[in-house]
Image (spheres, rainbow, N blue to C red):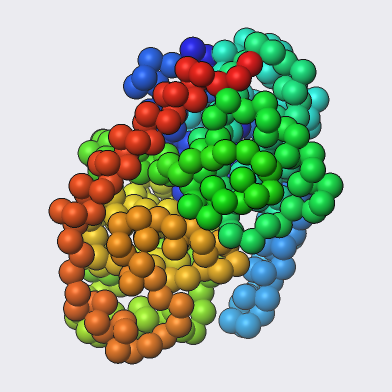
Length: 378
């Protein structure tokens, strides 16, 4: 089948791009032809760029550094240079449409694409604050179309709180009735779909967990990337308490810290490191500290000891859901407690048991994906 995937915009997010890569690979391995609908919102992007620039401005001011050029920051050359590694990865591994900036363009892409099915997901595509036009992610543009099977795979609200307005709730409740199968990435979302949208949903794994570590090793083994050793840190929202945990780990384990997060001062330093290098960081690590959901996922994929730092603003329930599945909720830390951190640094993870559970959940997730594509409503 030719399958459209509607997920969040393919920007600079490692996890967002990798979940799309993983879902496409799984569908290709099943014999299908997946195409990602590359939906973007130009107004939201401009706002994010402005916010990013002013964050940079404050950072440079506090460091006593010259302010970054506003014109250079927003130039096409700047953006292309910053994103070139991400653009290369997407161009190499993800089949997609051109960027689509309106609902009309999305409708046209579906009309021309002759798709047999559409999969909504994964990532926080059902979180209004993150998705351009939330109704698109409930397929409002296909509500009169009777020829395309429709399902959601590992769709996420990102939180266990309901963030929709009354109007959004009522409209999305109507739209969910056209889905043949709804699967979600968090256990809490199963209840939200039932309570708020009057539909049935089942829990499945994030697409990145459907692949094994060998699938990801193939991505970086063909590249000349430096070897690393020590504590790999991937922290999206830095804070004093998170840094205290990192320093405690360095001291307790007597290991150096390394990270592939880019330095945002000069244009050259603003280049976003490669996705393959980000993955290799986990493969090489002796220990991982991260406040990223997908950072936590890749720690598990590569069987690494880790500490996961609560990131409430980005959606804490995502962490709680996946960690509880593997009885690893104790690895989630929400503040600096020296004894708690030292205990985690000294404790091992029974990855034999974790992998057994992972294999079981993979099998369940594969079966639900297959069922949705086979029996989805048209």
